[in-house]
Length: 183
Picture (tube, rainbow, N blue to C red):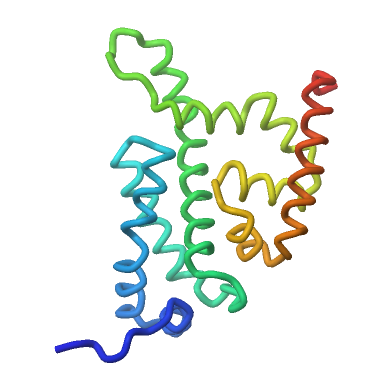
C-alpha cells in the first residue's frame, strides 16, 4: 500500500505548484516536525506556533510556483515560516505592551517575543532599516532567522562568500549607526 518511490522535495513542490494536494501533505509530513521545533525555539506559545505553521504551508501552497528551483526547499519553507512568525509577533506588539503593564496576570510574554519586538521596533530595528536591502536580507536570514551561511545562500540565491561579506559589512554599518545614536 506504498505510495511508490520517494519523491524529492523539489518534485513535491513542483507537484504542489500544479495543484497536487497530496504532494502538499507529503511536504507537510516531511517538514512540519522540524519547522515546529525551530519556531518553538523562537516563540514558546504553542497556539502561535500552530497558526504560523499552518500559515507557512498555506503560503507554500499558494506560492509554490514562485520557488526558484536552484534553492533548498527546506530553507525556502523556513524563510516563509520565520517571516510569518515575525509578522504575527508584530501584530501582537500592543498585546505584549499591555501584558508588561499588567503584573497581576501572572503571565509574561515569551523572551523570544520581547527580543523580536525589540529588534523590530527598537534601536536595532532602526539600524537594520538603514541598511541596504541586500545587507538587510542577509542580516534577517542569518541573525533573525537563524539560518546558516549555506541556508541563507540558498534562500537568497547568492554565493556563500557573498553572504559572509554582506553580513560583515552590515554588522560594521549597524555598529556605526548604533554608536552614533541613530542621528
